[in-house]
Length: 118
Image (cartoon, rainbow, N blue to C red):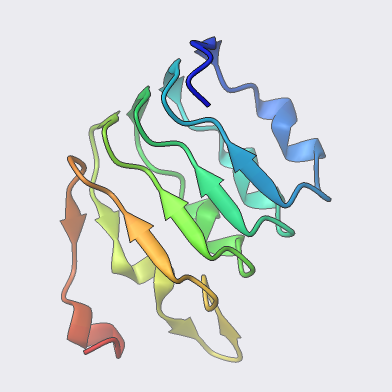
């Protein structure tokens, strides 16, 4: 972290399917988050805070069923993070292992108790 990595996160990151930790916080990364992040189903930590990411938070992040920490704060997303991503969907619970969610300066939509958290 904090190495001042610049540029975009490439879509090819989705090929790293055995990756457990992605800590790219406190850098100068920009542009949209690639939807291919959702292919990283072994991830337990996705720490992307304190960058300059823009655009929508990909709905494919709901595929990260092993993630425990999802930190997206201090970016420039132009969309809401929805608790729709973390609710139960039939037999599969999206983001079921999530223990730490931070969106800081990003917006969050939805009612927590609507999705069984309250």
